[in-house]
Image (cartoon, rainbow, N blue to C red; front, side, top):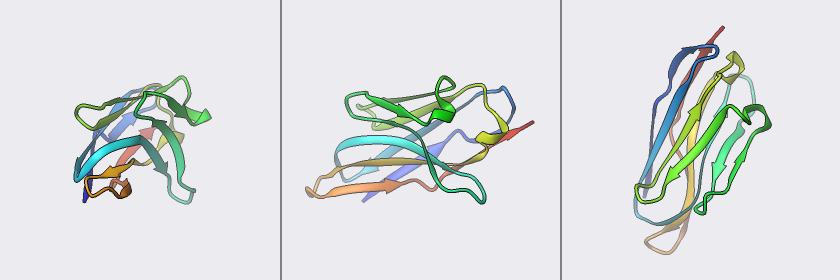
Length: 120
């Protein structure tokens, strides 16, 4: 019912930048929160950043000052600008979205993920 398509991952050297993007489509009536989680091998999944429909943001302490989340409500997209990347940022990054379907039900979906690898 909802598809999340991520793009922008890749390999970058420490100190470099990457920009992740995610587009939500399908039977969406309205979107509440959009965000990004990440999971590194052998580690628990962690919140990276989230943004509400009103533009309020929340970041993991580990990325504050380096990452910026933004969204385009008209296009149902969310982006994550990642600067000053560190090897410990290496993980699979998943886009998330929650909101209301055209049927009136709630949804909470995850994308398949995009790999971000930061070399030292």
